[in-house]
Length: 399
Image 1: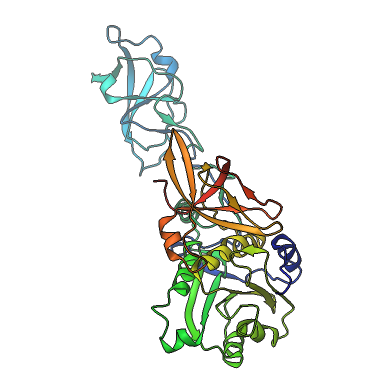
Image 2 (image 1 turned 30 degrees about the vertical axis):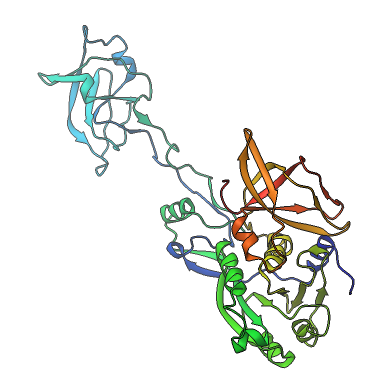
């Protein structure tokens, strides 16, 4: 058995060799879920000045201070109607009012709006039946959209509200990081079809897509160093992922192919259970991750190694939501090894319980389907006792 490397040590060392992803421009309307390569701040306010949020009359609040249904206050009604689509200069003086529609900007001198239902017109005047406060029924500058807001941060995933803000700013394009991924599934049994419906590469592809990465394609290769090396040399994606051929013995074809390329950095063997056979390399500044073709080991590598690696590049890769739950059974992990424990979280006794799933090994898709979360046991902890409260990452809702 080769030496197993500490995850946090490797993640610290590899930073010296990695280059950030390239920055590319994309249409704003096509950027949802991608990682922004720029920080964009808002540059103006909406409304630009106070605007009415009711159909009614713009006026001075001080003029209608004594207004009531039994003692309406008359105001001289100016000509015209202020509409959202019409902006013309108008000034309200003491004792005056003007008709206004929802969304129209208040004229100079006005500081409130009274709705139609609290008024009536008669003889060129509007009678106000109810007092209003200063800025009542009014949207103030910056309430709808303010200057200096962070629309999107560098490294943040583009959200629907980010797109709305960019469009409002008049932006048609945004710079994003090129988070392209390509995946190779290695194994004679995969290529020949003797393996029953291989699925782990689709699982890994879906994991990357769920986290905002663009998978350029899935490929297959035999257990052949030359064939694997040819694939490694042929792509332009930022991240290359290989499944299978990482075992620490005579079948580590993937690792041998990687070593033959003389990468700037390579580590084979992580202190993670499951997933200890994973390999991480850097070639021309781009990460290459090789992992087990078994689904649980692959997920462990993705969550414990790949996700922190991507976050260290400045990408705000989302974490699964976390909850506190009480273990229903003891879990143990070898000292110095990060444990990836599958659990089923369910409601019990007014709180949450986490049942460790000891269903099969690294190839047990059943455990991932029955479960809805996982517990990461740190390197310096040998496990947790039954009844102990632990932190669980949920990839599906609580039962």
